[in-house]
Image 1: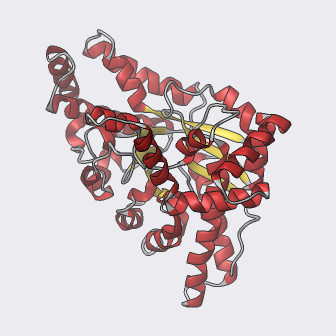
Image 2 (image 1 turned 120 degrees about the vertical axis):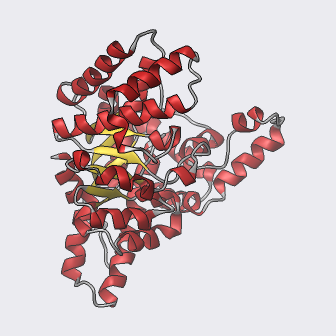
Length: 394
């Protein structure tokens, strides 16, 4: 079996996190797990949340294959029993003895993680990036999420001309002076990826905002029209600054509407002549529609895929996901990503799983005569770090 454990990693999509020293077992599970619901989700549906309900939510979060994989790898790292209580106790003790920054850095170093490309639109309020850099001890490059700026401007009592100017200036300042390496959009969560490329019309933005103001924030179709318009403006700013645009596609938390998040929904927009120069990263490769993302990266020249969220949260499916993306996507257009958040531990275990899954997928290609071992090593370096370095000019 191929072994990529010593290769360095550039995490092309993840999130900064706040310092959390001592956590209970349940608190830690809530920080590192994916899915499983939340007490607030149930309360919003009129469901009473008692101790039994909380225990059931915890059980569901602990019963995913990825969580169990993470627990096993962390138990090996700490050399403790493979239980949540033992791992959390070892984590808390290490932070107390080493200090938080040293602990976090040791996990990133153990995973050979060199660079984190972070979307600081989550969590909110935004994490102080200077403090985060000091904690993790590796290179941190931020990505500017446009929806944070859009919401700030919607909350202000301003007309279209001021809104438009503040939006353009905010993006320009982020890319030219703020140290941001690109933009990010979660329009898939808000109004979906079916974006008419002609939405760039200034009239569409102006009319949409006026309708929203008259409706006191409840603009119906006007909300979509405004967000589509601002998304198109963001593409133009990325072209101006030669900066990539990350676009959320595919799975997310419970709020996401999967049928509106398929990468294929973007095809008309991506083919539009005025936008073809923009470098687009399809975040999460649209998982579970990742084959679509791989195809789009094949037929359109400025499209990249990152493997985050399907890897690591799909657990044992990671090798299959990589293999299916590589069915069509050029090797130079696929980047490792984790979508990790919350605490340092998922960054470490995701890097381990990513390398393991990549080794499995590429070994199959060797066995089938599509690749040599030397070619597999080169491909692994490209996917784990080199492609992201090229995309972001690192």
